[in-house]
Image (cartoon, rainbow, N blue to C red; front, side, top):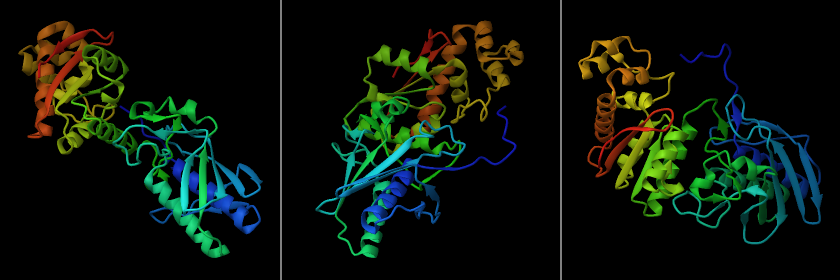
Length: 349
């Protein structure tokens, strides 16, 4: 069982919040003539975090400020990253640009059009508001080019889903509330949703959701699927299936280890070890073999029963998945593997 922390987990701030704070600090220097010691912004739900500046630069017609990303206690890939915003006088309102380490959208289906820097709508709106507010305060025209840079962003992006989603060259500047909630499932599930959106926008007819890297490698090789068809399901089978029910793709393959898929077969939609467990009594009833009641793992149960157990898990996992997508018109097949990546069972569409 997952051990709960003894103290409350500390929240942090999204890359979008950091970019907004950096933009505000740079505008205060460009239009106000002085660098602030700290800068505060107002987030969509009313929080007003205060940020310290970690980088300052200025020149003819521009100013640039940087904020160190603090993700709190969330296992984020960007804590400690320097999020920099350069503001320059321009024409035509507020425009956004990708500096070094910030990605560019190359595939349809994301909330930002192809060709645009991967700066999501909420951070853009926050920066728009900051520009409007300070332009009014200092009597300036709100015509500003904002360039966001993350010096090591291209390297960090390789640890995210960006390459698969068609975001090239670096990180996305993300955030819907501005707040990073520690160990939240929301970001992962949102990424699953975006993966489905990208697949649908590209008229992809066959996608796959897998529980881990090994099953993903096996399934992708088995069907020759492109990267953008591989949805990062992980433990969140329910998050994937429920979204596909509303946003269907003709065919879905679910791949995973026999233990994880045994949970799905028994109706669990969150396959994490801390949130669902295999009921070995049910396995015993399914197989008519009381020896399974004392099994410690599903692999041990498989050693007792062999292929018939894997076959039954595949069939019942398929039935559970189909019960979630209902009448969405999605064909679903299951690929069950062991830890070495050997296929133990498959169902047909």
